[in-house]
Image (cartoon, rainbow, N blue to C red; front, side, top):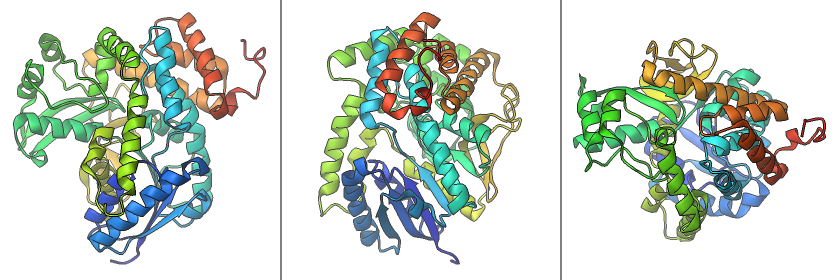
Length: 447
C-alpha cells in the first residue's frame, strides 16, 4: 500500500454512517483509508459525537489503523481529501415530514424523492451540494464526489449542468437491493445474479436478468407476479403486489418506486391511512432513529447493529465502498450508478444524468450502452428526466415560475392549480432553507 487515503463524509452524524465504516473496514486490505473525517452542522453535533464514538470502537475492534476525525468545520475535512461522500438531509427529518404531509392535504402523494416532496428535497439540497463543490475546487480539486444524498439523480443532474466537477458519481442502494431481492426469489447467492439496469434514479428498470450468465428475465417476472412471492421490496415502500398480466406485458423488472406511478391510487390511500394512524414515513423514521442512536450510545457496541436495516439503508456500505474501491483500484467491474449518459440510453440527452450499469475505472464510470428503452417505459422515464432538469434549474435560479413548471409536469401532480397551491404552501413551510426563492418579492415572482 502506498498513499493512505483521506475520505470526508458530509453528514457524518447520519444513522447510516456505521454502514460506511463497516464497508471500509471490510475492504481495508484493498482500500488503504488512513483518515475518515465525519462532518456535520452544529444542530447535528450530538448525533455526530454518538456515531463517531461508535465508529472509533468499530475500527478499534477490527484492528485497522483508520483514524476517525469528527468536525463541524467542513473546509478542514475537505482539505486534501481523496474522496468526498455526501449523505445529508437539509432541514432534517422535520423537513421530510412536511414534504410528506403537505401534499396529502391536496390528495397528492407525499414522498421523499417523488412528486412534490422530491422537488422540494431537490430545491433544498442542490444549492448546498454546489456550495460543497466550490469548496472542493479550492481544497481538494482532484477528489471524487460520491453523492448518496437524495434525490440522487436530480442532484447529479445539477452537478453535471451547473458545475465543472467531472469527478462525480451519484449512488443509490435500490439496484443492489433489487439484485439481492431477485437472488432471494431464485434461492441463490447474489453474486450469481446479473441485471442490466437502465433508467433514472428511483426510476430504474431491470431490462434483463441473468443467472450464471443465462437469461432468466421471464422466470423472475413470473416469480414476482405470483401472489405468494416476496423479495424485491424495500423497508420504506409498502409492497402492494402487482397485476400479473401488467408485469408480464411490461416484460422488464420495475423498481419499488415505480409503485408510485403505476399504483398511484393505492399508494395514496396507503399514505393517507398511515398519516392518520402510525404517521408518515419520516415520523416512523424519527422513532427508528431514536432507537438506533440509543443503541449507538452503548459503549459495548462495536459493530453495525442489525436494526439499521429497518432504516431503509441496507447495502449502503456495499454500494458506496465497492464504488470507491473500484475507482481507486481501477477494477473495471460493473456497477449501476448515476453518471453522465454519453449516449448509453438513446432517448435521454447525452449530457444528462442517468442510472445505468457502468464499467468502473480509475477515470470513473464508463456507461454501458443499452440503446433505447422499451417503448412502454420510455415516455415515463423521459417525463421524469424533464422534471429533474426543470427542478434543477429552479433550485439554482430560485425562479418561482420555473419551480411551478417543475411541480406541474411531475406525473404525480394532477393540475397546475393544485401545483401552485402546493408550491406556495411548501415554499412558506421551507422558507428557512430556500433563500434563493425569497430574494425577490412575491409581486415580482408573480404571486
